[in-house]
Length: 296
Ligand SMILES: [Zn+2]
Image (cartoon, rainbow, N blue to C red; front, side, top):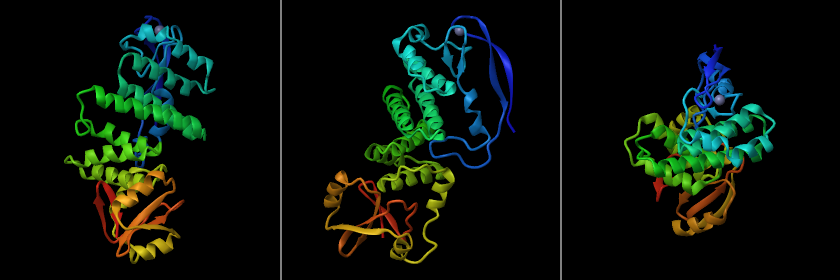
């Protein structure tokens, strides 16, 4: 159960007091999505995650704390444009405004969080284009965070795991796989490794679907409920694609290919199966070649 209260909060920028809804307690049943979006009921508390002072327009996760350069952000054209190009949803606008304040403060991780919140809200409203736009922003900001801070992927595993998923959801396959493979070099906790491994596999299949941590853990339990890999391919109605003699030829083809697919290595070489619409491929054996998962 979620409980919240309306408290009088003093804005750190203008010192005026405004009422703000604050979560006192919540819980979540079930697994989060791979980008760490929590399950219900916490999922529905998103509207309380970003506050706006109605007196001066300061926006932050906690308006009692002033972010660096907040005055500059407040007077910026970028902030005015959010109001001008309003999404029609005040909570979403608030998240987008918070991105600007955090960017002015060079706090790129919090900026990325707020861009992702806006993407989640767009997902819920089935506004696909907006969701793509905000997700791309969230990814770019998180990349910037890792570039500028002393945090490595292993030092901030949760943010790195989130980045892998946000890139995959945005169809940025090679960036996703690069970071996921770098992460796999570290000694990761078992569940995190399963999530990252799933991300590599899904990106390899050009699969930008929304999955939960539970999906990733189930994936790790392969092999294999059914018969051979080929039986599974038939069951899942994959369609046969081209075959390549070498992995380099396959890689060259994949640069142009946009269809979801999976690979089976056999005596003939690397056989492509198009998996458009299919969710999982089972395999008797899976291994990696140059960072990609190959199923036998
Ligand atoms: Zn204020």
